[in-house]
Amino acid sequence: MKKLTLNLLTLGVAAIVLSSCGGISKMVENSESVKYVVTPSPLETHGGEVAVTIKTSFPEKYFNKKAVVTATPVIKYEGGQAEFEPTVLQGEGVEANNKVIPYLGGDYTYTGKIPYSPEMMKSELVVEMSASLKGGEPVSIPGIKIADGVIATSTLVKVEPKTILMGDKFERVTPESYDAEILYTINKADVRDSELKKQAVKDFQTKIAAAAIDSTIAIKGAKISSYASPDGEFELNEKLSGNRGKSAEAYMNRTLKKLKVEGFDVQGFLSTVQTAEDWEGFKKLMESSSIQDKELILRVLSMYSDPAVREKEIKNIAQAFESIKDDVLPKLRRSQMYINVDNIGYSDEQIMAFVQSGIDTLNLEEMLYAATLYNDNAQKLTIYQAAAKKFPTCHRAQNNIGYIQMAMGNVGEAKAAFQAAQSIKDMDVVRNNLGAVAMVQGDLATAEQLLTSAMSAGDAVNYNLGIIKIKQADYTAAVNYFGNKPSFNAGLAQLLNGDIEKCITTLGELGDTDDAMVYYLKAVAGARGGKDEVVINNIRKAIEKDAALKAYAKKDAEFRKYVANEAFAGIIQ
Image (cartoon, rainbow, N blue to C red; front, top):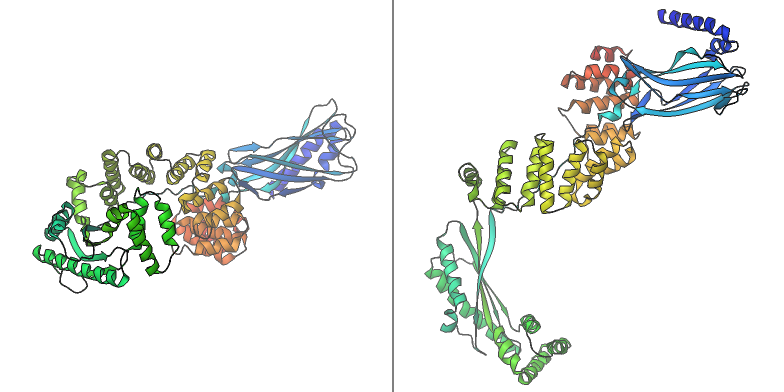
């Protein structure tokens, strides 16, 4: 009541002052007949700005034909104010270039925007005016409140972009195969001493002997593949390949027994395969040879699917081309022997011991893996830095230094490490991470440029672009970038895009969480949807987890309809 009395007194004083200004006094006296429609109301901030549209309707015989009025929308808050651009209006009898308001009444629609500041959350939108007649001094007209506060829900976006850690290629068990080849003379299947004296066969035996006594190598099995060249009768070749397999198997068993390989005589340890006519081998040898007209020869042979016809043709070719008979066919009369082993790397305990006592003992992949064995970021950082020092051309080590620095809040150091990684190898993962740095530093243009050039880096890029789109007030794009994976920011984008139910569902999918803002945003969504129970339950949980939200909720225009709600008031008091 006191405020109303003061307002009436103010208007009365203004009327007395303006009575000396002729017709302007009537404009003051009838100011309540001017109607304002404010959109949005309350005001809102999007993209860091507060935009407003004000439709002003002047009634008939209100606007003096000779009057000039300057109207300025002003956001007033405790300790200050922010002014929009003023508008100058004039009566139809004024010769100037301002917007004309007819004496018989008319409308004027104003649009404007100003930068947002947090103080504006608890504020009022007031229209301040001054009026004058031609040649006269302007006279102030008392300000008129036309809207409340500024909804700042869009500013709740969490600018916590996702960076990407590059993985290691560490394999504790790596398979390996030792191999050697025995050649046979035409139509023979016996293993010649000259073949066993070849260096390749000796090396084969040496590797088996070493593996048999090495605890870090496990011999898993053996295989023998035996072949005959495709220049004889199929029945003969089939028998030859089988006999060659048996002779190679006998040699293998003698060798494994001599070297004391455990389990060599267990069923299934050694497998054998026989190929009666090695056409694939013939083709490969021909393709790699320097034999004249080899393409023509292969093309001719490919015309025949009947093995008997191809055998006949190969004999004819061998008789016509001595080089095929001497250089190709003999190499196909063979047994290939394989020993399959598993190389067993360091255990986690051994790797962690090396980290403490001699990290340079580890190879690159072991170092990168070692960092994953620790939860402490400082220890991880030390390991990645050691890897980068020992392997200066490893972009993964540099990138991961940046990842940990970012997690520790050291944005400058993270940027330097990501730039070092990019100088070694420019790739999408690194560009995403540099985009995350730019975003945290407030350079959204650079962040967006980097991120849009890094789309193949995965979901992190889309998430980060979703944050940027919220900051840019492009909420539809933000929703699309976040997709169906629940997060606080995804729920915020859905709410700002007008999908209240989807926002509540998304936040619910996060389950029980220690993040107070999840519950706060759910309360905001409830308020927008008129869901009293959702508002009360979630504002209570939010404040229980973060008492500072009590003061924030008091000035949040989202809850303007709940200030008189007893349950709500009891929570925020």
